[in-house]
Length: 213
Image (cartoon, rainbow, N blue to C red; front, top):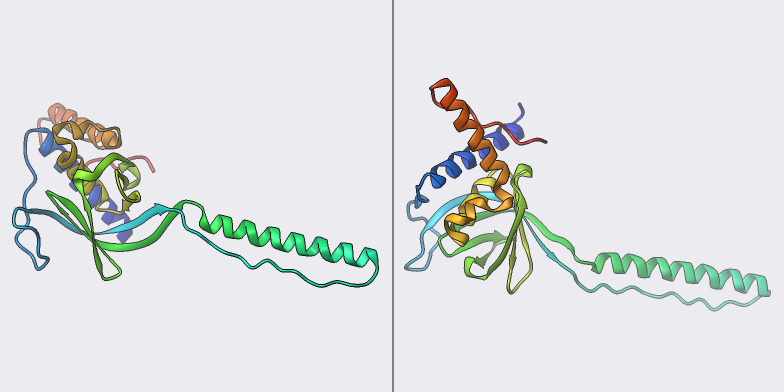
């Protein structure tokens, strides 16, 4: 396996182990204090690099061309048609650029605490508070998840560490019931299969199977 595959497997196995531990009644383990200053009652649980993006629309402008034409009626008609086509194409490009889509894509250092996600985006720490989460979506089998907030644009995080962060955030935001969210179903299935395998063989479970590609 190449480095990317190794990282994905390690991230998946780590998420499965955490899922099984939390499902069995365990709790998240706090990290040692770091250089990033947190609130007095804030505890950090994870610190990793993740792919990052925000979903929103914007405004885009375009310059409408207008050419003064003279000559035969046929020539003028052809010129006007060409201008109309050019303006229509420019307008469509501007509309496509302004449409809602995933923007601000980057790889960011992400710190998970009991209160928020801290993302270091282009040298600025952005806070996404757990209390504002309205919906948790995603596909951990594809190493990504999306958080939708009452205020603000949706946030997508992805990469090898994403499944571990997804499990942790689901537990922090929704409590024990968060482990049963549909987005975590592939992890729940993998942990169940590993437990069955362990019981059948009477030994420790092997590495968790990767989800389908």
